[in-house]
Length: 154
Image 1 (tube, helix red, strand yellow):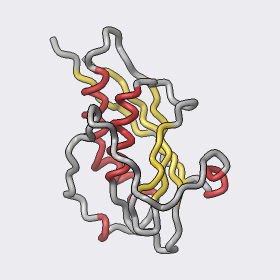
Image 2 (cartoon, rainbow, N blue to C red):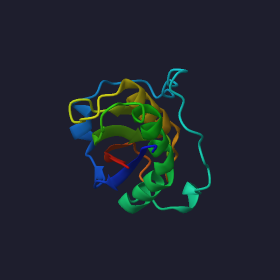
Image 3 (cartoon, rainbow, N blue to C red):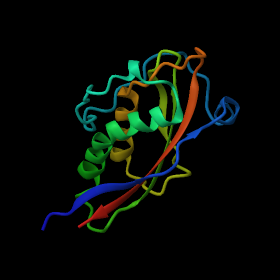
């Protein structure tokens, strides 16, 4: 019997204040995030969601995340299915939605995450970095904290 690994819960989306995340992150130029290593490609991007028609709200951000959840699930399945034991836990992510609606500075909060697989982390960061969100009407960057609670299901 093949074990299927599925994320089973989205925790609440926190629109963090710029000050809260600025204290824990380093300043970087607004350049595209580096691609994930060749050994950890992001699952294929599906551009079926037209974010230009969505308002910039916590609900629309959740909608974009839900739309891309199959790609996160694929990362989880690809990197965790080979483990001998049941692997489940929390994966906390942080990223910035730019004024253009793109993602910058996507990363895994290793201190707040219980899943410590480097390949999984790289794949999730690659997926996050490829996402597009509605453009914020205020023209500012918005730091986001988004946790995933991932669990194996037989």
